[in-house]
Length: 147
Image 1 (cartoon, rainbow, N blue to C red):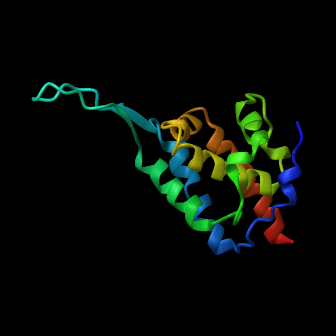
Image 2: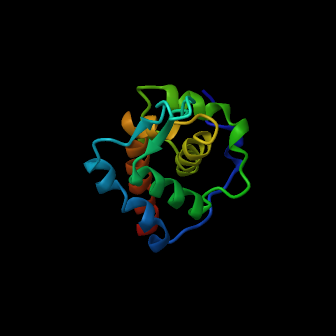
């Protein structure tokens, strides 16, 4: 898997305080047991059915807001990044081996793809992918900021 022709992308330079809102979510994510649930689908009084939809837990919504607000990879077209899907589908992926820009792109992909594939973000929380990415990113950013 190519790790990437798209990696001419540059992440926005953030200081430790700017990264903090993202990394401060890690303990809450670790403590969360349920990241969302399917709601709706019930019959209404007029005989229609309320369409079911995914209701994410608050931590998932906060995570999405933080990722979007950081604008980690400005102007990057996540829709065309095929390698991202390959990385996320690889159950044996070692996120520690990925570069910072790829980790940031994965976070954006997870948040943005949820707009078209409802429940995608929740499933990436439930299977531990988001936590693995955040921990790898926190470690790498910590090393960068110390130097």
